[in-house]
Length: 238
Ligand code: C5P
Image 1: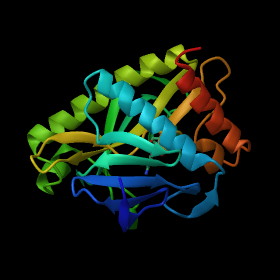
Image 2: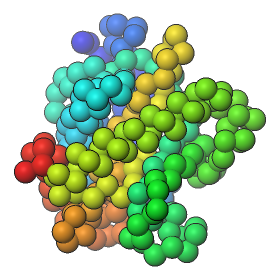
Image 3: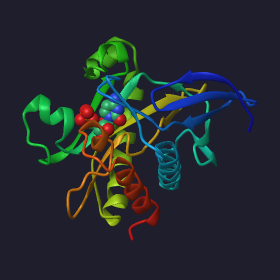
């Protein structure tokens, strides 16, 4: 696959057009941002780790019947994906209270939730990705009822599969963010990435964080945390 013009550059990835109009090429970067771009840095090797982990998870999910945009990993930092129109929603699933949920609702970080919580945020950097509910999504036309039900169902299915897989690798899946896209025929596919940038991974024994909170909260050993998470994921439960 030949990369052509740069279509879009995000905080952590570049998306290129290719010689096939139904494929994009994604290049994962080492750049890191947090707090809606207020904090900036670089995590050496992050692009390769996030690309490799995302490719692995997309294939695992595919084998369990969850369709995604992933086609193939073409280099350490690049993957080819199907061309989708991204739905402007961040779909967050939480198993344990942490981060913004703990702050907003005054629940101690680490509190086990009685059932998974699905949240939607409107993808708008200029507004800080505000939380929206089903009515907002339908009233603003961000998705229709059938799509909304599908997003929720797919997000919970991803949670079930990843939670079980990761627990065998000694990782507690605290929460994560997904994005979805539409094919030309309207079919919804899982898109974006699944990586330490977009998930909270805690060591099941020690509680050690192996994700972007190491960067957000200046905990040190960021690269090491990302590398450990990838090694455990690829190790498949060993
Ligand atoms: O910050 P918050 O607690 O809402 O994040 C919940 C989960 O979603 C975390 O795993 C975080 O890494 C992820 N997230 C993300 N991109 C955002 C916001 C949150 O990947 N813009």
